[in-house]
Image 1 (cartoon, rainbow, N blue to C red):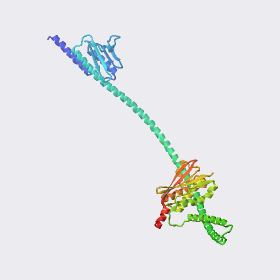
Image 2 (spheres, rainbow, N blue to C red):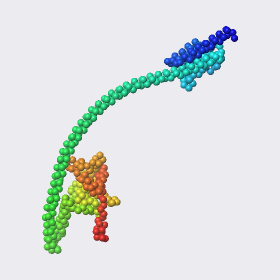
Image 3 (cartoon, one colour):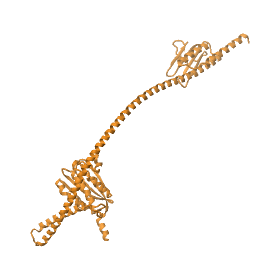
Length: 433
């Protein structure tokens, strides 16, 4: 080999090493466009290219750089044409593909093709790095904007929250003051009402004692009158024309005497031995006692003719008081008259007494309060104790009171009391029958 050939070969190797060094120092840029411009600049300085293009195929079909390509040439169609003097390399095939086209005037040698491939791959690495850096910077900028926006929103919401908290504390303080004032007013009203009710209850108790005393005083002369009337009847001849009138007078006086005895037994406060109550007798007594007054108010009492002779596990005095309170409550619910019906039925080990009226009914919103002590809808006419006392008595004796009502259609009170056994069975047990 001649010295000239050696020098030429050494010069070629030196140029190749210099080109490789230039390619190796090719890293990344601020953007893809600046990276591609730097790539074209280096390619023209390092290689014998006379035309070059960088395009983005696919839906974008964008020609990023085109230098030395004949005017009017469709660069994308040129990418499908192979030629000895042309180098085509596809970069980033999985993510936004870019195609590099390099062309020189003479066919590419194997050395030149290797150099172009190294250049293209280094450009691809720099493109990936540039994209990552740009994407990171974009994300960082987006995060910075979001952080600033979040800080602004947090600041605004904090101020709004502090303002809302101040307003809430002020409203809570105002409500607490209003609640304290309301409770104080309710307490004063309750105290005044309780004093009034206690006074009225005391008057009613005094009237009850007075009525019991009057009944006792009336009973003594009444018994004397009955004794004298019986003696007069025995002294008169059998064919006395007014004998029928005397019998009617005696029957009336005996009815009055029976009512007074029952009233005295009901009002007695002495501690007597508890005995079961016969349901029919208690109902008859209450109906007999209240029917005249109900008749004056155009109220018809309908009670069963054949009440089962049931023995209830409740003292007669308690049962009579319960029925009296329920009857009187029904009367007050029918100020213009109506009908009060009574029914009795046996349900297992209980007796159910149903008192139904055709009165005004009870609104649903207060139905759960009617057994509350001192609760009344009658104004000054009521004490609010009748139904609460009745419910307490029934509950104390192991029973319960149920209510069904419909405004404008009347109410029904169900008094459920445990059975103590039928009267006939008890009598047979005592007699051994």
